[in-house]
Image 1 (cartoon, rainbow, N blue to C red):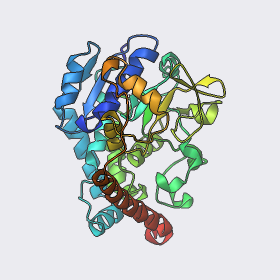
Image 2: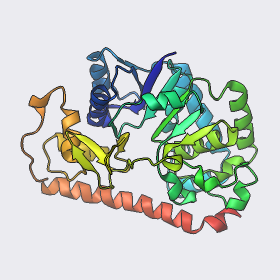
Image 3: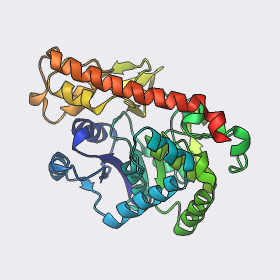
Length: 342
């Protein structure tokens, strides 16, 4: 049995990828192989980084990549509300289809695996997670269940009850940025049945703005595979960068307990690129991130940080405006969810 870690990356998130790989090497407690699934073909820096590490490989199964992109495309083509809204807001019909490539971990080289989004940092050993996979098919560790259900599914709970044989669907939803499972846990027969259900109308339950996250939640919860969330069942630590954690020797602690991982969810990759370029960017736990980013090359770490130029500020303002427009679209959609769901 081979334990491993997957992540999804390209050159856009290069600095975050390096920090993640270094945090795994420093904090996993043992040597765990890592496989990088390519987000797209923009991989020059990623390939050079992988070549410098003897336990990191690039996922090169083009058939698997094509399969999961086609799988995702078929799901979203069966979602009439998503297609209508994407067209209305000028988004492509295969909106963020590359994110579905993370599903390649289901038929990759590792028997047991843990998936890390590229914007995460590992803080402690993962041995207990791999051991937990002897009991469960799917494991998460986040507090998504405390958030709005409509981030994951866009049907009323009554309608969702027609699909999922789960007493309280709200307590089962999870973030797709970190999860653990086993190779082949969703076999061909299960996947064919799930896709048939989706194309028969169940795709309409998916949250159009959440891409792979809503799909993963559907696949896990609809398939009925055994599922465990540390954050729901145990006294788990937090993981989101907005939380207040203690820092000791570049390890984050929540009420005296080491975090499993820190997730920089929703922080723009460009912020990390600018920070590593010496710009004074305000990022939570900035010194911790920089420690892991430059763990193997401390001489390259910026020694001082300059304020952004007026042009950069203008570009950031424009980017923030665009992001706000996207957020407004999502908010508008949620506000009209009951009308749209009818």
